[in-house]
Image (cartoon, rainbow, N blue to C red; front, side, top):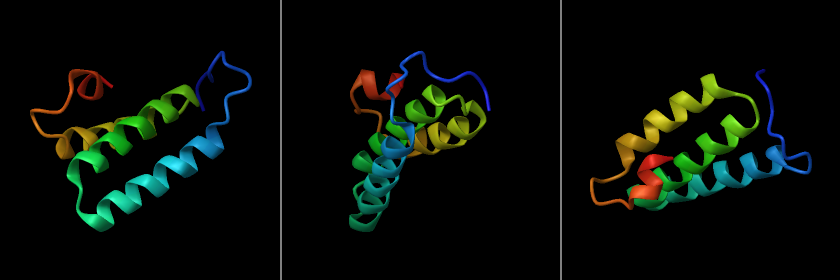
Length: 77
């Protein structure tokens, strides 16, 4: 595991669980935009938690799910 966030109260485990639940629900209803947004958020959480190799795979999936008209901030994540 790499260096973790400088934010000591960060609750990575909780955040990861919530993001994974959101991703599962978005996939279940077929909402590609919500799926991509959830994956982008999960990627940020994994990076913040010092797990960049895992984040790369999640962020690659997010790029595949986000449409070209997704907001710039989400695509930049």
